[in-house]
Image 1 (cartoon, one colour):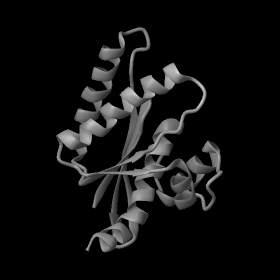
Image 2 (image 1 turned 90 degrees about the vertical axis):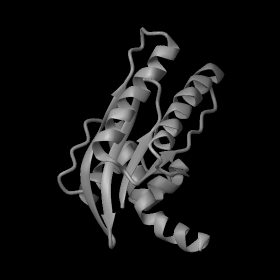
Image 3 (image 1 turned 60 degrees about the horizontal axis):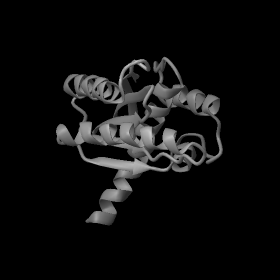
Image 4 (image 1 turned 180 degrees about the vertical axis):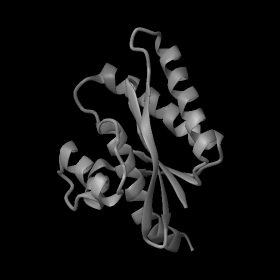
Length: 162
């Protein structure tokens, strides 16, 4: 199963592709879709969508995993993040990839073992679990962690649906 993990953001949306088969994980690629913060919101959303479309076309993931976002302070920022998240959910749907969503604490527990791990701990464990992975920043590392989380949870979710 080829999984793409997506960490939504308006400035930077992280993405990470892994292969998961028989309990083994293999890093394929990761990166960031950056938008021009001087552009209009609609243009920024289009930039993210175009780049994600390129990633989906190039790596052809079977499924996608997206981190749920929790924002509590800035209502305007939360709204913009929600719009970016909508684009991140749209891209897999347009390529026929089913989407699963995971809370940040679930992702951290799956990768680090504790739900309160910081970004440094997550990035370190991603590199240990995916030899050869060199995510360019925390957004790409988080996206790989989301993909790993899905690889761990997808088999049990399939059993529950059966």
